[in-house]
Structure formats: C-alpha cells, structure tokens
Image 1 (tube, rainbow, N blue to C red):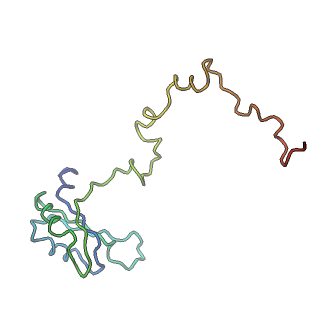
Image 2: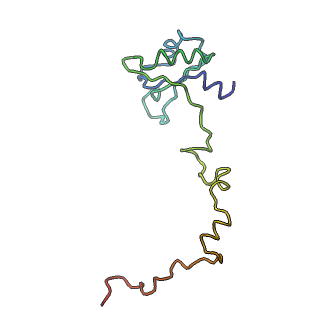
Image 3: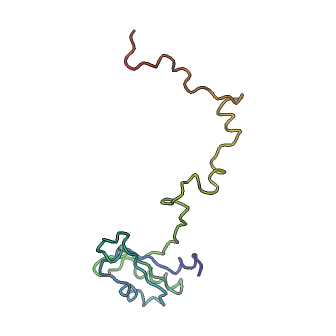
Length: 149
C-alpha cells in the first residue's frame, strides 16, 4: 500500500487517557469498518511510567471507513477525556522541513533557488565589479571612549 493511500485510510486519535490500550482503541473504532492496525506510540524516555504518548493511529481497510470514523468520533469522549480524531498526515522525510537532520542550505535544489547569480554580484559590488572596503571611513576610531574636543 502506498503512503498516499495509507494516509487516507489512517486516522490520528489524540487526547487519549493513559488507561487506553490498543484493544480499547480497536473496540472503539470497530463499528466504522474493518481495522487493519492500531498503534499507540510509546514514550521516547524508557524511564517514563506512561504506557503511551497520549495519541494513537487506527488504520482502516477503506478510506470511507476512516472518513466515517472521523465524522463520528471527533470530539467524542473516551475514558472521561474528549478525543481529537483527524486524518493522519504522512510521515515527513527525514531530509525536509523542521526538525530534519540536514541543514536547509544542504538540501537538494536550495543552492539553485537561493544563490545569487553573477549579475547580482556585479550590481552589488558596482559596475566595475570591485568590492568596496567595508572598513572605509572608520579611520580614527581605534580608540575607545569619548572624543576630546
């Protein structure tokens, strides 16, 4: 199954109570259609006493079932907490967007999109192409403090 198809058949369930298990989530969403998988991501810290991170994913076999679950379960109450149910977003590529492990300027296509071309550099430096001295006009400023008049 492609990522695009998988994201249409998968719903994100947020605001879950710590008592909710995969079986609980499965049972709550079963009336809307055949469920392929249910997952509750574990906390990143192994020392955490929480069973999951407060959200989960339910993957249905059909996109229509996922839409039906969103329409009926968003803002519903589960274990005394109001849950959020939305279409799951596809997982980001590790090389793009915020939180990536690659600097923006190292990503493919960045240099061609944002680097200045030679014509821009000529305009910046003057028609002759010589760079002006950025320190020009700062003579006599080598001493700190107020000037004597």
